[in-house]
View 1: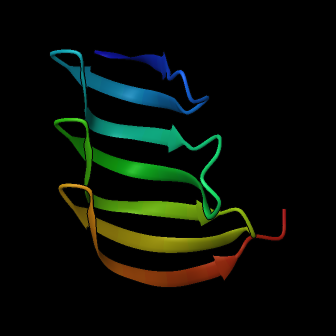
View 2: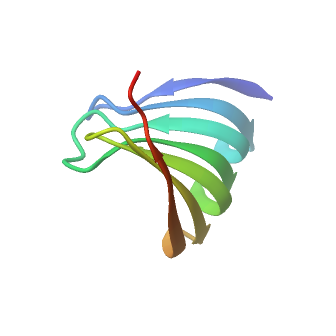
Length: 82
């Protein structure tokens, strides 16, 4: 099932859910994180888990890989100028 969930801190998740948890492909937008603007990728049991794309507040775009919310690799793709 796909949908959108807003959190009390202003964050937003748009994507797939299973048993009320973020699971599958989705986009998580951070309202107040000082560095990360958004993560687009795979979620498993409410955690970032697998390959994804991260955009920072200063508009750098990274390929990232997470394992149960722990960042395991990160490589710069480009500086987004849009």
